[in-house]
Amino acid sequence: MSTSRIWEFRSESGHVSGTDLVGFHVEATDGPIGKIDKHSDEVGDAYLVVDTGPWIFGSRVLLPAGTVARVDQHDKKVYVDRTKDEIKNGPGFDPATHGTDTGYQEQYTAYYGPFYVGPFL
Image (tube, rainbow, N blue to C red; front, side):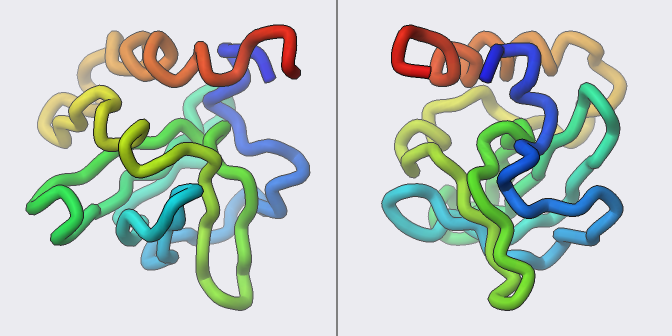
């Protein structure tokens, strides 16, 4: 996956555009991180906003759609291919500026993009 594609759901993830993911539980590679509070299917800007609840007290994180490895509609779970620490160490999510600050996507691409490039792909 190239860094420009981290803002798209992978075709093999099982996500169907238009499917409401709000309320689905999110699982990192090493355990649960919270529930989806908001998501976007917008082409070139698809993402999840996850309410982390007690894991990162009172916080939400934004995950580009390319981090989604699999969507389980039956169990209402979304599996991402990042660890809890990788997510916790990512850029901070500010709901007040999200959508009004066009530079937010560059921050997330700079952080998550390197996970998806290299000779191993």
